[in-house]
Image (tube, rainbow, N blue to C red; front, side, top):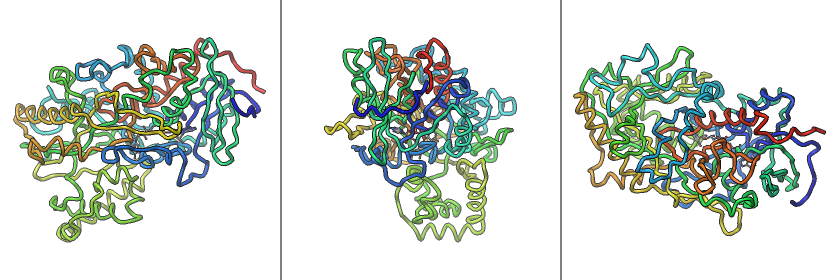
Length: 559
Ligand SMILES: Cc1cc2nc3c(=O)[nH]c(=O)nc-3n(C[C@H](O)[C@H](O)[C@H](O)COP(=O)(O)OP(=O)(O)OC[C@H]3O[C@@H](n4cnc5c(N)ncnc54)[C@H](O)[C@@H]3O)c2cc1C
């Protein structure tokens, strides 16, 4: 190690990164262990800066399907929760079981879901996403209500839920609690750089932190380290720190590989035949005020029978940018989104792009829609604006009623863990190159899932799908529309050995006995779910795991 300018005290736990994962680990551990010291080291400065060297040194090799670095993460207290949407979705049982389509790459281990389940309730508290279950069939008030008249559950379910956080911005929300705990020290503007080599029993003693303003190196000594720097940066730190794997033959081959996000977009309209007023198309509120929404999901039995990737499909508005929707309210919202400055204030770029598709089209037709729909064209967006931007618990989005009982369908689908989808270091040993593509299998499964939904609706006699593209053009259409990079998983995956993964089931890095990674990069499969809720449950579990005397290094004497 270089400069040995040691901190004036050692700590029991050093957490790197203060996004949702880092904050939950630090808070939960510090509360459980009031006599132990936690250092929470954050790259971002206390006062946010526009540019940062980490994002400037990421090379995105597929901008068509992967957002640019500044759209994918945020730096500073709270990390990317500064711009996240707050959608909290639970993984499904099927995500943890190997299926032929995953080609042997589902390395979770059979008991993973059971192991994390006890921590879901605590995670819900941190996310403030409501205490209710993720299944309407477990809620007496909802048990007998279906998404549309005539729909029955079978191959397709309509009872699985997405829940919504405030959305909770972890920085402002937990700043006070972090400061109030005397055993947490918060350090801003420091970049985790080099770990010392593990000794024979796998213990890593020190980590060098580089001051981002002065370049000064300081060293922290800790009993345990948790990398919670987000998926990209946690992966980059491990790729750079090959010495961490000195007790193995070499770094695990899976490190940086199997990068997954979600395939996402719209290719069809659902045409329902029942009473439009009986269609449950919108966000609902639980007794505690938290929002939830039901979605179609393929049942586990059908996923297994048809060898599909896990897919969620929900009712949505037609494409905003296409004025043929003739909705004045949607045209107002589209025009607001493409207005410079205002658009940026309404939504972060990745979300704005999912609405506008980066297109400025049919302006006069949009204006026509607005005029034709007055006063509703203005009244509806005004009411949405108030509920979405002025209340503490924000309306998560908007889905407008369709008198024709026809809705666009938005799909959000699992990707296969593909070894060629990967993060690697460039020749300079610093740049993070992102290789990300959609496989034929990913796209084919999206199409087959829609076909299955279509035949299930017909079997129920309650509707059908109308595709927006001829069948032979669907593959290209999906490849052209789907873009991720904000749900990052797979690159430091959990497995039963270093031959198959990077972390053990307790998130400990193979070859070490006190270095952990708490990030969605640990997840071997991406399922249909957005990753952060499950990550929260893992963060709480890790804090409790570290609190067990057996898992900790000897207690440090603090200077
Ligand atoms: C626009 C957008 C919308 C999203 N919406 C959703 C959603 O609705 N639902 C959902 O589940 N997920 C969503 N996500 C993803 C979600 O934000 C992330 O999954 C989540 O923030 C990950 O938490 P984290 O703590 O692992 O990492 P982050 O939140 O990224 O925090 C990591 C922290 O580590 C710090 N750091 C990085 N490198 C270093 C280093 N070398 N040294 C010290 N500190 C370092 C960073 O500055 C950062 O503060 C969204 C993301 C985006 C961009």
